[in-house]
Length: 88
Image 1 (cartoon, rainbow, N blue to C red):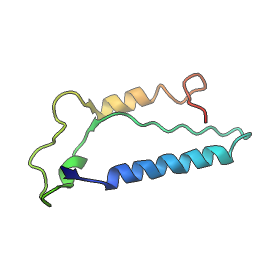
Image 2 (image 1 turned 90 degrees about the vertical axis):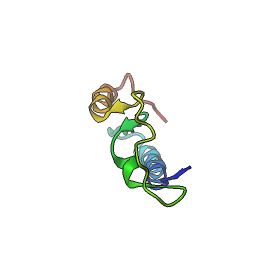
Image 3 (image 1 turned 45 degrees about the vertical axis):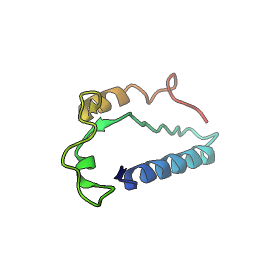
Image 4 (image 1 turned 135 degrees about the vertical axis):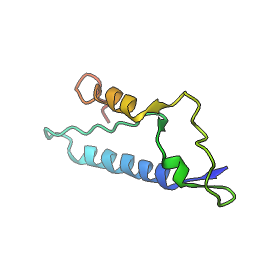
């Protein structure tokens, strides 16, 4: 089991922060959108440690089912608009 909690904990904190900010800005002209793509192929997993305290020899998600950073950026650019924004 990989122990790489810094990323999901940080992602959770950002979601909480922006949910609070969205609430604070209700009634203003500011809209908050948080984009959370699925698994994105980066080297971040190669810099973590597994359950034995060792760095993984290979990316455990490198199976062709994850999107590239470019694909994530392209899909994310569709969302910041009124029709697709999730409202709290």
